[in-house]
Length: 120
Image 1 (tube, one colour):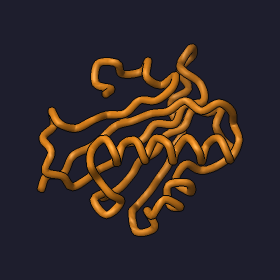
Image 2 (spheres, one colour):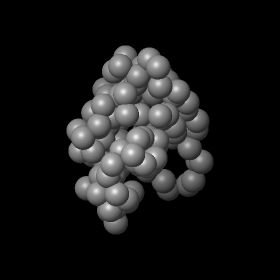
Image 3 (cartoon, one colour):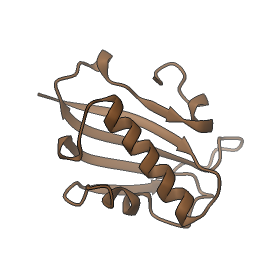
């Protein structure tokens, strides 16, 4: 087993608790499925949100997905003029047998434009 970091992001439709929770759950589920992981394989998750998303904590939605024993933390993304709005980013640190080349980084909806070079 190796320690690997997996990146991902999702753009949500609106600054509501429901949209933030749904976005986090969609993103984390997609990352886990694409990399054949479960919450027990995850060491920690770091979330960032753009400044326009303040209706809920992304980590709260993640905890509801079986991440109760996983350290989770969130922060505000740098407010760069012209940057993609309503975006939640995540970095999961995981234990896996996958090589770096086999890791699937997931970028959903409008966030796909952020990292076309590594997004699956």
